[in-house]
Amino acid sequence: MSWLRRHLLLFAAVAVLLYMLIPNVVVAVFSFNDPVGRYNYTWTEFSTRAWTNPCGPQGLCDSLGLSLRIGLIASLIATVFGTMIAFALGRYRFRARSGTNLLIFMPMATPEVVMGSSLLTLFLMMGVSSGGLAITIAHIMFCVSFVVVAVKARVATLDPRLEEAAADLGANPPQTFLRITLPLAAPGILAGALLAFSLSFDDYIITNFNASPSSITFPMYVWGAAQRGAPVQVNVIGTVMFIAALAIVLVSQLLTSRRRRAAA
Amino acid sequence: MAQHGPGDLELIGLTKSFDDFTAVEPMDLTIPQGSFFALLGPSGCGKTTTLRMVAGLEQPTAGQILIGDTDITNTRPHQRNVNTVFQSYALFPHMSVMDNVQFGLRRRGDKDAKRKAQEALDLVELGHAGRKKPNQLSGGMQQRVALARALVNRPDVLLLDEPLGALDLKLRRQMQIELKRIQQEVGLTFIHVTHDQEEAMTMADSIAVMNAGRMEQLGDPAALYENPSSTFVANFLGQSNLLAAHVTGTAGDGRLTADVHGHEVLVDAGRVPAGLRDVWLGVRPEKLALGEGNGVNELKGTVSDASFSGVATQYLVRMPWGMDLTVVQQNDGSARARLGDAVTLSWDPGHEFVLDSAQDEDAGVEHVVVDG
Image (tube, rainbow over all chains, first blue to last red; front, side, top):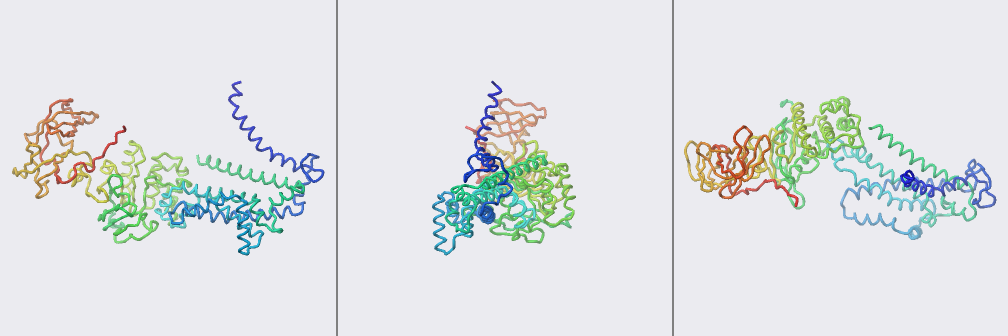
């Protein structure tokens, strides 16, 4: 009885975790299904056909490649801009500071439908044609906000005296930035970059507004396919994505704990 | 040493103003090479601002900073051969202790960085801790790493910004002795900013006392203590009994007579600034003796408080005019007075100091905030 009482919290935690993971498990299990008909909703028989031929359905791997490309470019540019904005907002007092803060906050607070449609209007007026470029610009725009938030939190905890100490010890400004500021801000920048990539990768609404028939991203492909009957390969890609994300988190956790132990 | 070195540090009319106030009034100061110099004053007196200007972390509003013949006023911090031990230590948390200490040497491309850094760590008795991260060390150890990191560069001037402020009393005493030993060993110019008068007096060769952006007095610790030039210095450096007195005449033998609330006392003429009549007569608590002197400079009162601390007993003696005088009696075997005893206090003429009565008698008194 007391054993149960002591482990009740553990049971509850495991149960919640399992409940949250059920969709991922279902997706993974059904990636080995060989469905009859268009819908992959009922279990028929075990098959590795989708895994051995992930690019089978027409357009799937094209859309995946496009999403990865846009995600990488958008998150890279957003990370560079976002980091610079975060340092400016966190370190300096300037006239447009509160205005910039508001502008940074806006994309996070605006409904995606509003943002998607207004971006489309803007692009139309400026003569930027819909497609990959328009999507990338749109993604950079909203990703910057999230990068700024992530990096600013880190910048706020940086002790400016560390930079003074570096200068005092003979490091010129570029050396101080590369050896002190950047390594210390790196966790925030990395978090911002990862957040930006995943936001870009799975964005549907804003992307859909600014896409052209030749620029179908992965979320758009999945959405379209779901209405016609999603191929099993969608489950395969989903499972791979989930495992990749899990692996990144596990490896980084492992590295930090090992570094901590090595230092001790 | 002196003939090869970089030369004295010289501040000429150094001034720092911020928008609405002047942090440092024009200051002229020469700090001899190889000396241990203390900038002493209460918080907000401008001592840290002065230090930061020497380090290059703060741009002076006016004035010049020279090391030897070289004007460094307009150089950036990384161009100055001046290193700082920060109050918060400011160790780089992502680097090992060794990398922290090597940082300055590496920036200059020193091929021998590792060996020199190890020597510096050995000097502060942390030779074994090179591979650790700063946050794995205690406060005192971090402090020594910060010191090694600055020392290893053999700067022209080493600046210490309240480096012992975060340590507990016992460790602080120990580090004071260490710092002094290291300074004598390496022979660099140390400038030590502190608000702890005892720390300044035990460590420094000379002290500049600062108050509200101005330098009040400059001198060696004994001179400042025995001969403060203002009530601020008298009260900030140790304790003082300030008696309102009026110079009445000469008594021969190089002495003047003065009147203290109706009692005639003798004062060393050399200690009275020319022409001054209304003065503060200052007597340090340990210069006052419990018991009659040689018939001069005697005041009678009653003991209103006595606290025994082992080495000495500190009394408060209430004077007929209502003032409490502080008396420190060494525990040398002489009879101790008890609360309420009528006692006579005396001091030798020449053991006093004399200040203009126009000065505020409470200047520099450290107010103790009592929690309500």
